[in-house]
Image (cartoon, rainbow, N blue to C red; front, top):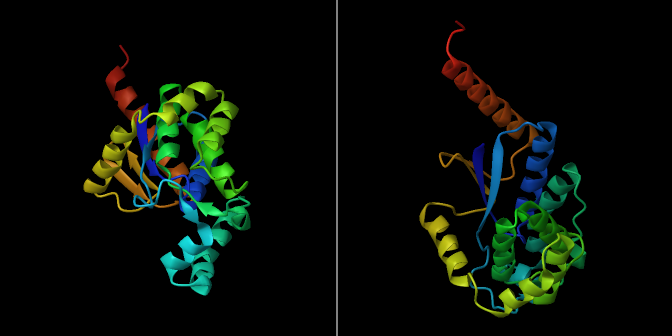
Length: 222
């Protein structure tokens, strides 16, 4: 297997689009070599723990309502082209995502990262849920087959919070400055929400290289 590390934030629309395109490529290549691991990167590391009103956040970030709307037009267009129905009107708050990243981490210990990441994206971008709230995260965990009571106890503690923050900072120190960022085999960086065809080509190229290496290892027939 080839390790594919993904640096992402569950409130990043381009991360949602990028994951959707990658998933299509992986589904079209069922024998793909990738083993996927998700890593924390907070778009808003200074966000208050309770989050903030989304309209105020966007207008402050982009400099007014008109500029915020303009900034999101490419998101809406690319989401639609990728088969995603993003419901931006349903989103009322921009959350602090540290607890969501903690949940993704715990899901990884149970082999359920992809399911949790999916549910976080859908919960936020489709259902407009505040994924900074513990009860919302517990519902998302339960929907993916995790123990909601255990997740609630972990969220009520500081378990793994310092580790996740350190991993976020380490990614920044190593040059990750936007998401999504994909790291293939700890060597090749692929930034942004890449097209399905690019991922298919990457998978085909890696598969061909692995097959060639296996044939070489086997040596000539006796």
